[in-house]
Image 1 (cartoon, rainbow, N blue to C red):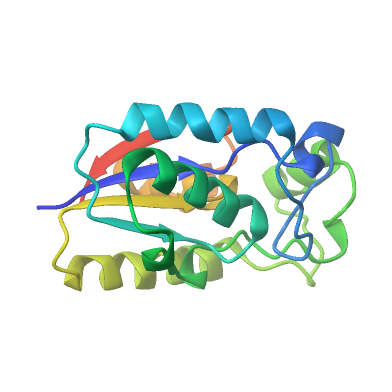
Image 2 (cartoon, rainbow, N blue to C red; image 1 turned 180 degrees about the vertical axis):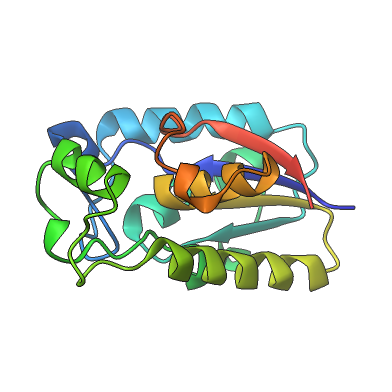
Length: 178
């Protein structure tokens, strides 16, 4: 059994301005987002972290590096896995987040956006990769879309319920067993 500490990245510039930041928008952390990441690191400090995995987007990777420094994890050992990158929002990226969420909830996203099923499938692929790893205490730094997929999985909800769930706050830790 593995313990996964899922962390949604700290507040990004896009979050602060209310923009939808899919994988197309590589938005860095704000000063507040860096502080949130530090708090997440302190929350994880005594968890005996053996592996840190991050999406390649700067907001997740920067969060992972801040956490790594606090928990004493070698920055060069952070593993980048794009199975856990944010959903492609297509033409909805860099527009109002409220607009994006409304379209996602109504299942009316433009065809340029990644499907929920595709995001689910690559999340499963990433989790299968984690299952094969020898480490048992793993920090996974990713995005809001992936947090929704993980939560519907662990609550045994249909995938179309992912946008009914509350958005996970930036830099909060969601612990689950794998």
